[in-house]
Picture 1 (cartoon, rainbow, N blue to C red):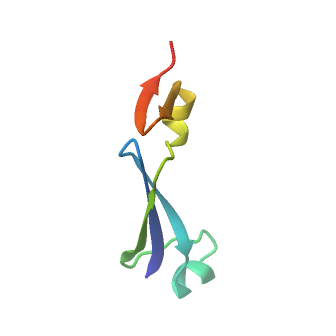
Picture 2: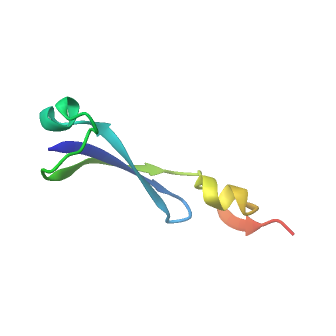
Length: 69
């Protein structure tokens, strides 16, 4: 079972990243996992926007999400 963790941003978008590979994926040349994928942790990123929202001109001011004109 490969382990993943999720990061939930203020904009309600989330990113899931690989935390650790299982024994089979570590030994597979292409690092393929054919087992269950486990979400081990979910982290709230208070006061942070995801990279996509930042690239689209959004920012946080006083706890409110704004878009730059």
